[in-house]
Length: 464
Ligand SMILES: Cc1cc2nc3c(=O)[nH]c(=O)nc-3n(C[C@H](O)[C@H](O)[C@H](O)COP(=O)(O)OP(=O)(O)OC[C@H]3O[C@@H](n4cnc5c(N)ncnc54)[C@H](O)[C@@H]3O)c2cc1C
Image (cartoon, rainbow, N blue to C red):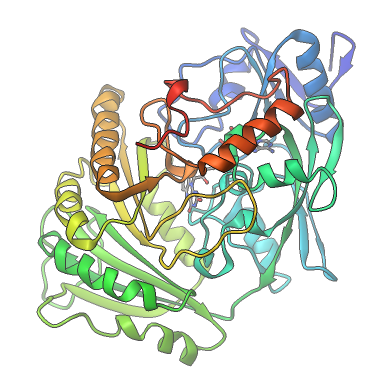
């Protein structure tokens, strides 16, 4: 179709036209849909569409926003009076056996599309823990995926991008050319000043063995469980990924004859990948038994696979539900965190709501890229519900409780689990944020691409 002399292979739906509403929010994962209205949505079908989208927006005096997988909790791509470029119809992938690099569209889903494509070739990529997350937003903001403690943030495997700039030119950005855009693409997330047409991602040999180990504890045991985890974390092999999840779901591992307590229980769910079962079991030795005096409700260990783990995560994050989410990186001790976490975990308001402690230490020197904030542990809370009347209550709860945690020894946030319309914090180091703003000023002086979605712009990337 054509508009103002521009031709599009895909459909351009202007506000008020039939199909606009579905195009606006039909692919937004969070059922708490935003009250923001783009001037038009382009369902892009080709590289020419991406170039023409930016040129058309410039002609029309519109800003450009982008959607890949639609999984940003705050629906960052849905912005008022923009041209929203929806990439959902673009899914092609090609793999180069010589280099192990996959070239892929950004709306590809990490587990449902990318992982099986790579698995057939004996390769893997540290994709998201939930199968339907798009790799577009995921990689641009950092990307905390399976095996990220050993393979690093997903964006560290971003070798190059093909990107449409604010001038409407499709260019390659990598270590040698347009390297400022490549630097920004590794961590700027929804503040990236460009429209990425393709990622070029380094892939890795698929580890032949993956084991999961899960302990179930009472929520009353929050303090000793945290003490145990903080104690073993720094010494764990980097292929070992420990997560403590507070959950109210009924189906948890229990020893025979043990009854599930009502309300919240704690699951210490640890995964490890390696070359052999023996190697993985050896790496999981710190979880072979729990400390004396700590009584578990259940314990299971078994071989697993990324698809199985992804399916479990999908069940934990159901579609068609409303989500209020927040997070903080923390260097606080187990003693500091325990009382605040226990109170939060006891008051999880619905059966699906959950909250995690994710062991990240020891942190390491990161490559020179925009992504720059992490700490010893990652704390994130996901309130999951269905009644729109509960939106304000849920949002108040998640952001106020996360603020309490952040006040202990919070180091900032991971963009992936934020909603800056309610609570802001640092997501890049001050130095990297300043550098990103310089890049934006040079690459996109007219602000063609939307900036971060934030309630109070003066608080963007401010850590207190
Ligand atoms: C159920 C669920 C599970 C999750 N699990 C994880 C997890 O395990 N690990 C993790 O790190 N995160 C996780 N997240 C967070 C998720 O990675 C982020 O919300 C991410 O932004 C989603 O990417 P997307 O492409 O699906 O989202 P979108 O909403 O489509 O994109 C988010 C933003 O990224 C930018 N963007 C996307 N594509 C492009 C492009 N081609 N060019 C320019 N800008 C672009 C845009 O600003 C866009 O608004 C999860 C989210 C959900 C809903």
